[in-house]
Image (cartoon, rainbow, N blue to C red; front, side, top):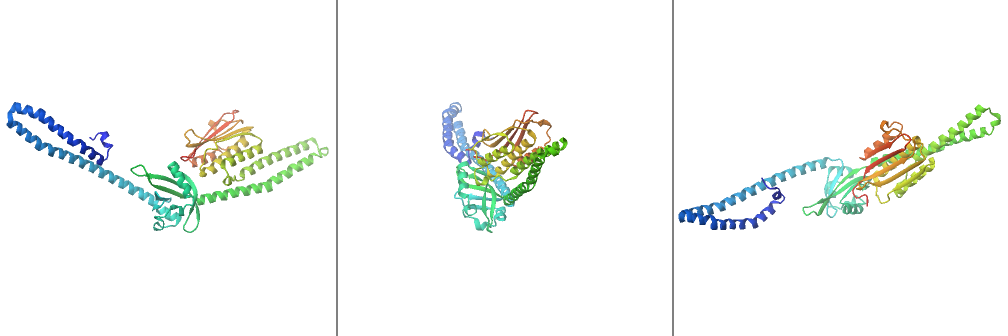
Length: 414
């Protein structure tokens, strides 16, 4: 058995250590023999026995030590060879996985030049391996400088959404992660990029947002105008109350009230359907403006607390917006609330975004909640899609708190 402390050293370090330790040890053994055992043998058995033992001692010590050292070196070399084969097998397995991956996976040297290029990169971007090897990756990614700065600052970049130039001239939307690769001296010698094409997904989202905007316009120009006309007509008929009996007058009042109620709901729906254009400015500001506008529509008192120092990954922005939107819709439809508090802040170790939405409404029995009719199933699906969690705390007549935790990338809170 090799002591644990001995295993911490490489073979070269062990031999280097033995080179300085073994000779003094042998000298001490010889001196000890001469001053101790040899003197005793000579006094007890005479010169003949003494010389016989001494010849045997010196003739055996050297070969024995040499044999032990060679056995030890052999075992270390065999262990090193076994580990090398294990590493090679793992490397081959990783190379095979990289080769068949649909994602683009490529490595860069310390100067940002491409050193490997998998099949997924060929299929995604159209460039053959020989066309990109040795070239700076900036010719593919316009944001290469910013990406490099993020990598140097944090050591890893995750869920970085940017544009990539394909060989056919098309500009792809990609989501990528990059990590540093260290050498034996713990110095960055290379980096690895894993890139996924999200162009089709973003195009579908754009189509969906456009459809939402179209529905909002149709509601405004069609249903809302018709309802407004009905409410106006009911008010005009009420002015002729002298010609109506009490029952018909009550019906007209109810029609007018219902029409105005539906108008408010339609306006709120139109407001919610309109896409939030945060890409033209600051996401935090856009969220504040959306909440303020929604609160104005329903007449709430709203407190908003957003940590402006937290950097939200771009891929989370649509999810956060929709979660807040759906939460406010639920409060407006079911809670009968007058006050709503919303906060966005990092978790204590800054690895999660914590969203709290609290209202002073009528609440409900959260333990018996099925999710039907409250839009919570859709919210749960959105949260699960980004590996987050959602917790709902509510009691009848005591309001509701929804807490959502979404994972942030490393270094997103500065």
